[in-house]
Structure formats: C-alpha cells, structure tokens
Amino acid sequence: MKVIVTGGAGFLGSHLVDALIARGDEVVVIDNLFRGLRENVNSEAIFIEGDVCDYSVLTAAVEELDGVDLIHHLAAINGTKWFHEAADKVISVNINATHRVIELALEYEARLIIASSPEAYGEQSAMPLSSESVAVFPPAHIHQRHSYGASKYLDEVALQHAVRSKGLDGRIIRPFNAYGPRLRGDEYGQVIAMMLAKAKSGHAIEVHGDGKQTRSFTWVHDVIEGMLKVSDQDGLAGKSFNLGRDEEISILALAERIASLCSAQIVMKGSYHGDSIRRLPDLTDNDIIAWCAETSLDEGLAILSGEL
Image (cartoon, rainbow, N blue to C red; front, side):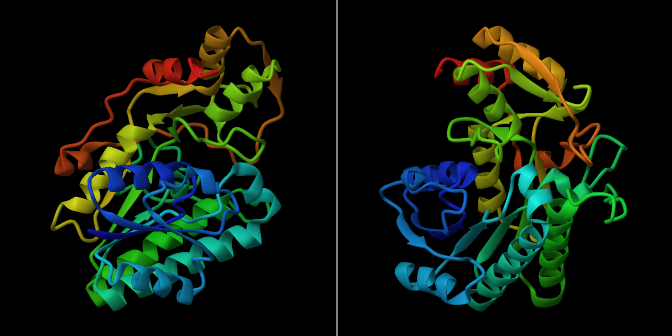
C-alpha cells in the first residue's frame, strides 16, 4: 500500500512506520520535528519536513507516492506541560491538521486513521471508558489542560461528520498511555519515560499529587499491532477503538516498581491541574479486530529498565 504517516518522526509514529516498511508498504513521513526526531525515521521511508496544516505539504506527499491508499494521522502537540503553556497552539495545530488530512483523504479516496486519545473523555469519572462514554470537561477558566483533550474530541467529531456526510472511510484509535523505546522523558514527555529518565540520571523519581491516580499502560508494539488491524480491516468506517490494557495501576505504585528496578528514590511533587483520577479502557470493541495487548506492564518495564 501507499501510506502517509503524519507525525511519523515521533514516538508512536516512528514505530508505526517501521512496521509498515517491514511489511512492504511505501511510506511517506510528514513531520515538522517540533517534538519528533529525524533519527527516528526509518531510512526506507520518504521524509518530508513540513507542517501538516499546510495542504501543499500533504499533496507533496501524495505526489511522492503517486497516489495514496491509507493515511495514519498522528501529528499533534502532546505533552502535559504544553497543554497549559501553549493551549492556543495545541488547539490550533491539532484541529486544523485533522481538518487538512480529512480533506486529503476525501480528495484521494484514501482510508484515514486518526489517533485520538483517552484525554478526549475529559475528566470522566465513570469507568471503564467506552465508545459510548460521555466526554466531561470542566469550565475553561479553571485550567487549560483540556486544550488537548477537547481538541481530540473535536477531531473525532470532524471525522464522524466526514464519515456520515461525505462517505469518508475513517476510523479512530485511542492509545492508552503507550510506552516503549523512543518515548520522550524530558519535562514535556510522558510519565514512564520521565520516571526512567530521572532514575537513569541518578535523580529521584517524581510523583505528582498523592499518586493515587491510576492509568492503564500499553506496550508500544502491541499498540502498533492494533493500529494495523484497524487500518487493514474493511467495513470499519466510523468505528473507534481503545487500544489499551485493563491492567490498572496507581502512579505511586508505578513509581515504586520503577524505583525497585532502577534502585532509585521517590519524591512527591505538586499535582497537575485537571489530572484524571482514573483512566481505564473498555476493550469490548477490540473483539471486532481480534486484538488484545499481550505485554504486561512488568514485562515492558523490564525491557526498558534493561536499557538503562
């Protein structure tokens, strides 16, 4: 297949590109390297450094492939600190980029997979989170964390509109806290990588709030397998899939596991505004694609800690 991957120099995107190349697909990666790294991109993929919000960049990718069959849209501004520090940019980039790739998919009659997020549910407290769960967002004057989650919710609305009104073959995935090699561990990164980076540098692992908030973490290669199943199967237009595990763990317990593996200390820090108390996926819909995430958290952490 001829495939475009937006955000393909990032953590999840670069692993997806590797899998697509390995099975023989022709791949063009589009990334402006705001957070992605050029060295993450598979050498067999065509790389275009550019802004996905620029439609001419997208059409240049089509020209490189002489057509397009499938678009995986992962380009977005992610990272909790950005949600507060650059809320306007998060909203603008995430929504406008999705509009552009929907336009592209419609013009070239390509299948489109957009990467949403469990953040699209907002501060929903009823668990597990399913495709029928209601999104709950607090008043905007309280904090800006949900600049990201609300943008992802609107991405889903835009895709569903295109499916219903314009015949787009579009699908939605929501990776639940994917982790693995290449995950950024700086202050704008994600929690497992941040904890491992602290341990690697000899500093104490930071836990925000009381540490009782829970998450479900999913090994990156399991997520990629799920993404391929969603993109390859016919008859899934308008469907959404939570790509995760139902293995729930508190952030403090996560820190304790990593501290034990890496001989590190733990320090408690102030909480993040709007941090979800729980986040657990309903996985029922994954029966449709015959997929489950098989790698346990202990197995994944052992692999990563062995790289320190």
